[in-house]
Image 1: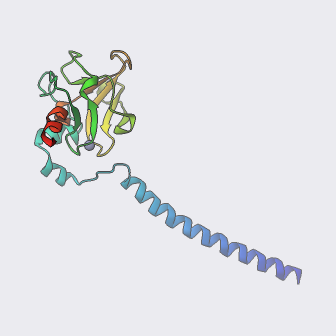
Image 2 (image 1 turned 30 degrees about the vertical axis):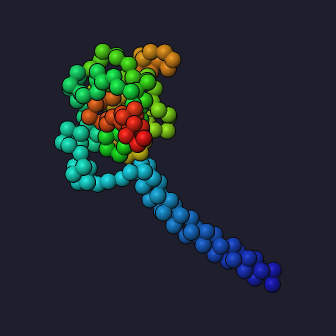
Image 3 (image 1 turned 90 degrees about the vertical axis):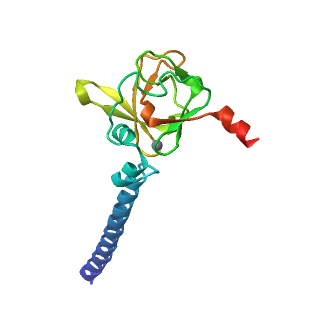
Length: 176
Ligand SMILES: [Zn+2]
């Protein structure tokens, strides 16, 4: 009788465990799918990006290209306003953190806030650098280096092609 009882309990435990395993697997699958989807808020196919961006923008933003130094429209741009991601409009850098680094690309010593940018170690071209991407769409922006001015000591070196500019003074006067 005792043996039967043990068998019964074992059976119940086993069936519970198996049910747990099944539901865990489903959670894992859906969770896994969600987490890849949620890596970036804005997700588009390569075809959609090609339609939306110019070939030059697509090369830099989606294929991690680099524009020629001293060729970008924002390198010596000094207006007051907000620099946004050219692919999704995410606000990335304020003009108040822009400085002339002389490196040939627009340079900033700080991002608008840490959530706007995704940092990835980039070991390409025989160098160890930190790639910066738009945290909203995954668009390639450029790299960040630790030779910038105070107060951060950082230099965000960004392709002009990855950026758009919002003239805040102009925008506010238009709405008034
Ligand atoms: Zn973006």
